[in-house]
Length: 202
Ligand code: MN3
Image (tube, rainbow, N blue to C red; front, side, top):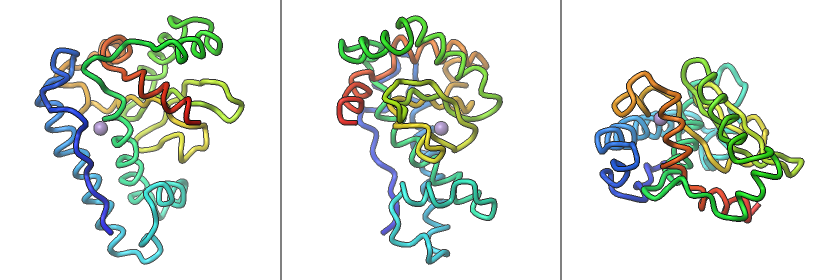
């Protein structure tokens, strides 16, 4: 069965007031994410060893295999964007109590968490992602990955929040100002309720 582009959990105009305009979401979801899904389906169609595998299985089996780099790039980006849409909210930026306590415990303060996340997002050279993960030792950590890679592939932990720092995710709204895009995500767009639910389910 072919992979499909999941519908956005909100209207394309829903996040405009929180710093992500309708055109960004239309292009990012309808064109960029769709292109990863289409490319991935093309690879699966041609390769029997990918057929019948889940997205997670394809991400893991193609990671680090140079002959499967195009498969990994598209599978990784499909997985990353599925999470990314759930990480955004028109009413974002509000830290629920349980997650706030855990962040304070593991980073020292909410400000220290935001500073670390912003550093990861802004120092990822070129395209990639910044992540809040629950690591195997039970602690929250900030990581970053290049291009389509992610914590599922690297084994760095369970991703609670992922921020797309490819230019296509912020150029219409913030031009070249990735630090402002990241700060806006942390303060206004991040769906911390979703992250807390994922933390509780872990
Ligand atoms: Mn993207």
